[in-house]
Length: 107
Image 1 (cartoon, one colour):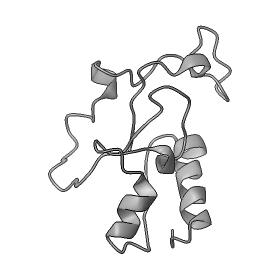
Image 2 (cartoon, one colour; image 1 turned 45 degrees about the vertical axis):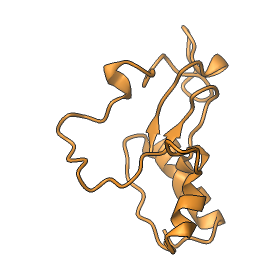
Image 3 (cartoon, one colour; image 1 turned 60 degrees about the horizontal axis):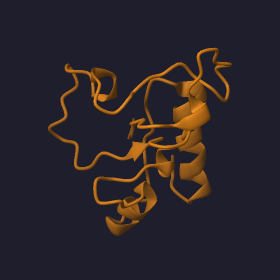
């Protein structure tokens, strides 16, 4: 998954509280929205974009380039166990892991 903000509304703030508002980041069309160049993306089958027009923390709020939600994509492939890793462990990683468990995935 990746943050991919186009116009996330109140999610961006000049005076963020770092709880429900943040400084601009991962803006569509900027290098900040790209994966780090050192990341080997050759094994990535799909990318799920989240937060285009609103704040989004969980990867399960994301959709792929065809509009398929992450949970549907996983279920279509018979996936029942996921490993969740990332940078913002206190927000996005935690929310994604919690949603995985809520949706019956071993995490």
